[in-house]
Length: 316
Image (tube, rainbow, N blue to C red; front, top):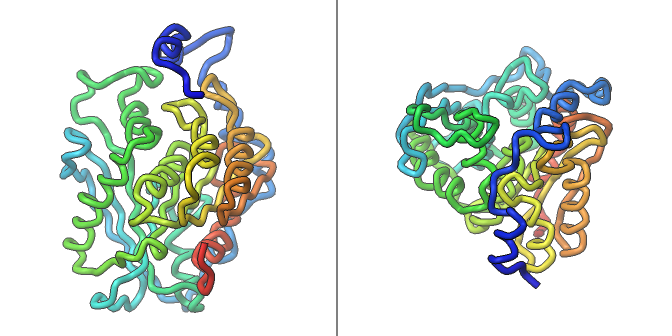
């Protein structure tokens, strides 16, 4: 049975998580960010394309401020278009939350290089990638400072950890129309050719977008997803078990040395998500390694995860 509102308030579950309690804090995440368990993981071979491989175009839109849903925020947006894209034909789409982590040419994922390789050997159809950074508050003096007293972290959490439709609406009504208009391209309306990806809070955000906007996104790639009680994400396993199955294909990744803080335990949370998706009959894959709270393992699996998510001839 659901908890009644009176009990919810009596247990102080309506209050923000304390910054520190019992000698513990959310800074307990620190050891998982650079953990020896990540040592075996390196960018996948596709992140090192041959010099003869054609490169796609990457455009950076700096300090983008056109959002009504998240007013008074600025963010960078990067847009990748594959080589020789036929702009008259709707392209497949992948969106990356915390885009700067995935677009970095020297990072653990190197997404554009992987996409170049996969396009070159015809492993994937022409795919546009949109890398979206979390918003930077333009008026920090008036920002909610509940998230470690940092307006930037708070804004990222509002966008990514909330279980509302807002971030998906932001992508669908604001970001994607800007991208198609600015670049003169067409993006598919087919939700099975649209993927959303992210790490940590960006990972749960990817799942939320597909959960809330299943008619627009049906492929999810979550690295070290924060399915913990930051803004109620620990409820997803119950929702998955108790809601009629949605036509999603989900790839989850976490590791034995992923984060543990006051918000919860990331390895257990991701294992619980895996169990709930299995129980409810979802088409999903879970890779549980030895790593910490980073993109090292996800980067090593990146090309393989895209091939698994984007394989054709099968319906979820």
